Length: 378
Image (cartoon, rainbow, N blue to C red; front, top):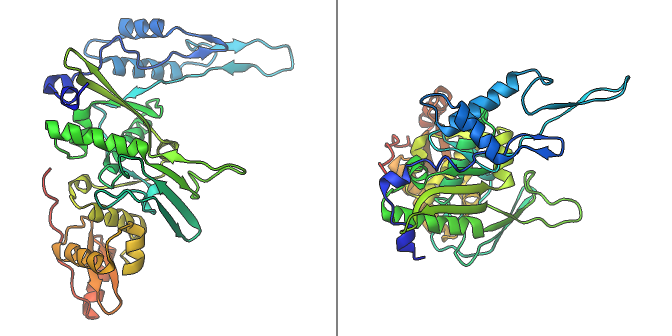
């Protein structure tokens, strides 16, 4: 199957939900007796209300079951015990995947990976790198497809945003998310042309091929083991028709991403983040969002900033890039200015506290940063 055939997308097909015959979930398990998936699917189709989609009906039935008393809820069986012993109710629900298409989501970033330079900020970066800072150590090994980039991370952010939105809505989730390429590209403000689908496929190659070994909490080695994890565990492109047109994508996120979403170890980011076309700008924004947050200001030396960004450029070129970003005023929620006397960068939040800190700084002779411009349209 050629790449041209794979990405010959019909817009109507790209936005069409998966066929109803595809089960969205495995039914509840009672003890050792698993309810047949086909029976669960038929029940959903039979009890679906007018205007309800398959996924909506499945979620409604699960919510209705959850509200019923445990000893009367469908799919639950109380284990009879002798007098003097507690009654045990056995219930297990296992999702193979869940459908994220159409679920409104606010962009989120996973906090565990915001601090460290896991993703490449320069194209064609094939280095195997080791990063150490404040007791944290990370080893990144790319595949032959290259190291995953900061722009590739947009796919991971789409997944974590959908996971958090589903959890907040009370929807059962699993690490495997089903969506459409069109929705993913639209969410991340990427091109939905044939070229956009080709770039998406290459991003999947890098994300599934790049491996990470780290010592920070969510990925650290167990005692007596060495643990390598992927940035995405698995990607499946589901096609149909004579031309193998794409109808869905199933993405299995890493344990790091899934656990961050379940623990709400995330930070909200603006949708305009995806409009930043510079990978270095995205990476600097991440660092600023994590360290400055809602505080008034944050200062960091240029050498340490370059280390945290993960740029392989010569220091003078990186310094020139930082000055360019400061002059452009394009860091969204933050003002930034370069301090030549200290060879450092100073960031100000656009909150009241940040504006007060900026006013104080300008009175002390620091050059006022340029006003941030709106991010360019995708």
